[in-house]
Image (cartoon, rainbow, N blue to C red; front, top):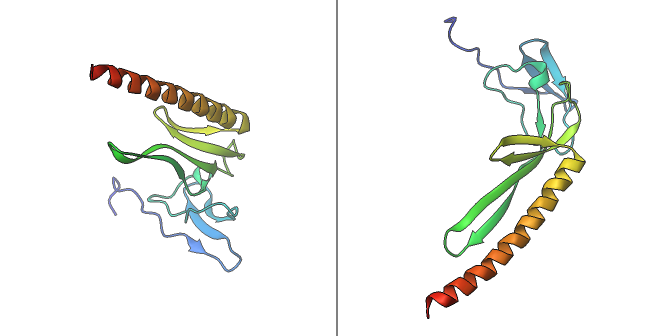
Length: 138
């Protein structure tokens, strides 16, 4: 095998006890027990470091179906956990323009509050749009 070619990780192995065996770069084979909400198969293109093993819930998108553009996705959220990292807690993962953020309960609630406030602002602007368009016809 060429030295510049990355090692391809073998498929994870499901065990009879419900765990999954994942080959890691630094800890050999790790037996992973997934929480009930984890939907990933723990297949990795290249063997991860043990700390990079991550549980994820199925992502949920806020969607809007607009008459002008049709369906569009706005924001994605999911539960995430890297149980072998230096931050083993479960976080809310949010995909934003700033990248993928991992937030605790307080941060998640602040995002929810900001989204509600922004929704109110969008409603106000929609009202303004109605008024502006009504003036265009005069």
